Length: 354
Image (cartoon, rainbow, N blue to C red; front, side):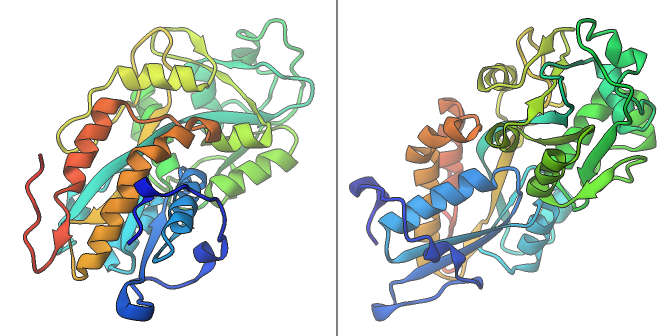
């Protein structure tokens, strides 16, 4: 195995990522290892960049990741059809209990969920907490509604219907978004609740962050929730949202980092921030997790998995910001590295965390 730390990363060999199938294969000499992952669309652009770079630098390894949504990623882990999963919604204990090999959740990056919109002539938009809850519950249906107008006095808001775009698939992004809405609005909590696939009372449905982004880009008068990097890459307008301190905060790397700073990572590596405190904190920020098994039948898979995820936690973090993601705080990286060392082969007891 060529170690990433000893080679120059060359971006290329795209075909390595396109080979279908899951599980491990072997090339000449039996040293070739293939890992199959699937799950969240939220971090997919960053994961694909990391895995492509790693595979290019390690010709005896192939890492394939399918962006199918957090719900399918968790299901794939439970069904045993992947080598690792990915989810923006951390697995529940009852889901973990279904996996005989055990699971280890590893936060790999973080990002903001933004309300992107397509409204001609409106480049700046401020939405109060009541306003954006009411938009996604169908109580506000016009762009010039008084609840929107009162925080946008200098904006010429059109008398136009709001086209809400929501996710059609079981989604960790949706889970995080509904967790925030339920935290700040008791009616939302009781009537819709925190779900990966809620019964939205309003909205055009699209699959994945990719699908919602495409719908927003092509539909005038629309608004939807997507990951910051998708909106940034497509040049979509993003609303400033009222935070817990009553300030209207634009989504940015800096405002997301302020939110992360308000939350300490617990020992199980599952940290939630449904309504982060702080004057400068953007209100909808989440970690996103890669889900590994605690034990694997193939020791070579464990070796490669640990190596690629170590790359992601170190060198890979340097490319997070350019794609709109938040590099992990160093204290979190050290905790994740320790948890990574607990993974092992089924014939060998996993090592204790440092």
